[in-house]
Length: 92
Image (cartoon, rainbow, N blue to C red; front, side, top):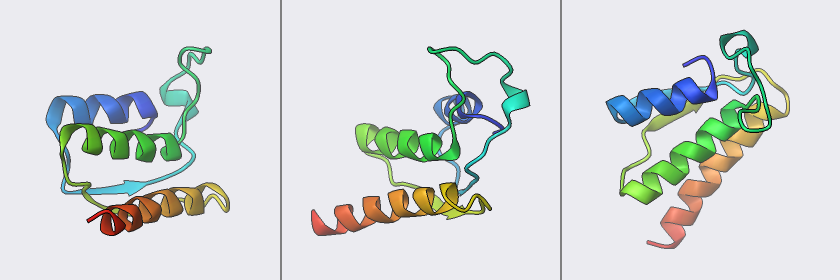
């Protein structure tokens, strides 16, 4: 997926993949029209959507990696996913 909306569409229509590798800075050219209703969203938004989707639907979060070279965005995605699993372990 090259942008948030494609990411959501692929998973909604095809189910969870076995593995996802997250990038923070997604392709602005792949979704050329940005508005308040459809802003330029990042890989962090994709990761948050996936966490919410898995929780809402009783699904296991797939194996994942963060390949982003963004010095701030990559760690944000990693920490979000790590915190999710830490909280799940704590809540049993």
